[in-house]
Image (cartoon, rainbow, N blue to C red; front, top):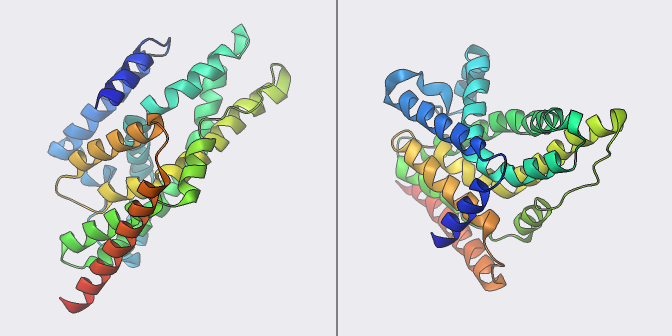
Length: 252
């Protein structure tokens, strides 16, 4: 936790620190939503199966997109602050606010459709677990652990810290900001998708799981180098947990 607090202190010293307040406000909106202030489909879906997913998508497309944006804003804005700070610092004065807007547009252009695909994956996991939420959660945690231990996950995480060349003038500058958002989002998706799947498969305790996963992603982004043995252990534990959950789903 000391690492998390130190990273938050670093973010609070940046010029874009009000974005932490925006993230906190989105967490409050999510909390009010789960207390009955907003419909439950903002962040999760309770029914299982492909047919239920298609029906929900047709009926609640715009609210689901709004809910996905709310979830992304709450969990990801603190993680985006270093990249946004970089793009503001490297832009000319007249582009200092347009550049981060284009970056966020590129970021959302990747994440929003993929959030719907992840919801489809959550529906598949719920259909495997059936009426046994414990099996569903075990499957999701197993998938997350297994992905955490793969070299592909570490590769995506390492690339998310890179900053591409950012042109200063003309259309190239606008496209560069948007493309940076696209590439950063692809790295974030590759790094975080399995962890973010965990709170999407549950109904009770969804917001608490979101907060825990958000802390895990934040720690992962700021942690020092993780030993290869820990990655192998996570991969093995994840595979065993998935296999056990599937076996339990067939036997129970």
